[in-house]
Image (cartoon, rainbow, N blue to C red; front, side, top):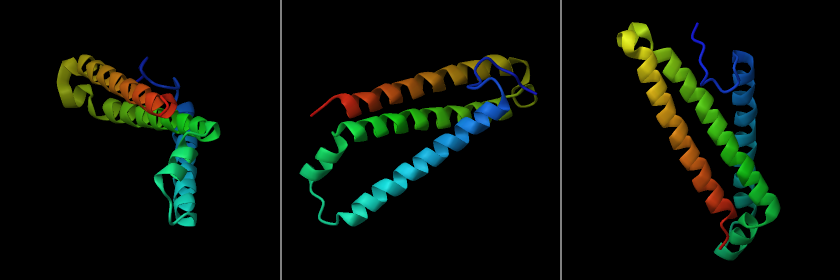
Length: 123
């Protein structure tokens, strides 16, 4: 079993729970947006802008960005710990895995910050 300081929840149960809760939240968000678009067939930019810049929607979008980040991290951590192993990569597997995971964390952080700027940046 691989244990790592890079695990999000420090144990499999909490990582599983993060995956499930974030997946449900993302599904509900996607269904809600599709329903909104279906109920507003002649939607124009002004109405869409008003929806997306409303404070409740900004809060929901912020939760969605964090859900995407946490969902992605748990999935990517699982993939890297499953496939970047000593069996696959030899004795340098731990170093390679930590470098890859560090790069993935930095990339996810960039995406989160970029998303927050888009949500709360105005205009």
